Image 1 (cartoon, chains in turn orange, purple, blue, brown):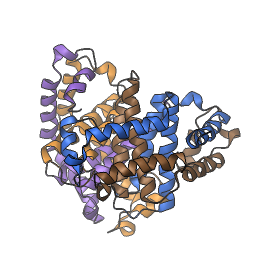
Image 2: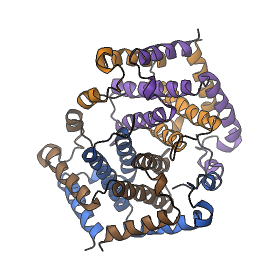
Image 3: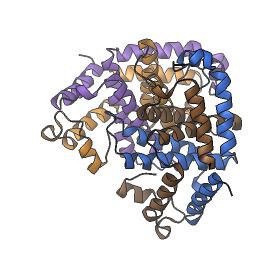
Length: 113
Length: 113
Length: 113
Length: 113
């Protein structure tokens, strides 16, 4: 079993022991990611003097819910990520964005990342 | 090289070819996760008739930034996730939360996930 | 009619002309606020060189949805805000937080703002 | 003094008594809105059995920070909101969106609300 499937297996085991699959609709997991993203951001609310262990805790929450939502639509996590990196290569050509944030391209394309 | 490091390597290569490390402070990446979480949630704004390919695109963005923020603080992604699953086991004991969302425990502990 | 009710009236008129009340459940409006908050934050993703008119547009979206969600639970907007300011006065006593963000108090109380 | 300015005055008085203006940069306030939006959304994480008083508390937080960010860029709150309602009238013509969420228009325009 590969590394990501092995982590996912432990998360699903945790979920199933608590009979929580019923709560984990794709929509509820999308909300959960936004909620956890807010908690992560809270560490930077008034500056960046964050506590590293507390930060890891929040990043882990985002990742766990992101793995769960991917699983809820049967998406292959590695493929999904590498596909997006490939799309970003054509959306943000090196010669146009090197050393700038590419914000000017997003303005027009408005397609994300 | 393990699977997660291999994905991370491709993300970092994409970043470095564009000289974007300068933009990727831990704080900016935390903001980026919140922004992408909002875009993901937008697919469920008025219901759950989402397009699966578009959803994968947004989940991938969340995951890519989550990998990048973990990397920015030199955190081991697998360890961070499994550590959190372990902490959640003691925070949400099976006998107290089986079949309920555990929301009543969060009210008291207010420690997240 | 007071100022806030007068603004709300124009928002509700806009909504009703489009028959959109059916979409504006309290939950959908909560999601909408999070989505708009993400769009607002996007202007600060890589720094704070924001465009003021674009920013006003996003702040207005947050405010419009916040007025709508308050309306959806029949809450009095002015009262709700002033009540919260009063609660914050006892949560954040001047002698404990003057010149600091009060973050140390939130750690213990974990009650927000 | 109009109603909104009167509420804003009380918020600014609260802020100034604590010498908190230094923390309230436009960017920090944008982050704060996203954080509070996440706390508001948390009440709907696994369903919509929310507590009304707790919800009011979170909506008030969003509104207070939205008033503060508007103030930080010297924006007129009423004007900003009514201007946006006007723009939305042309973005979402009644004949095209009556009874549907207008999502199909957003796909093309990608300009928000």
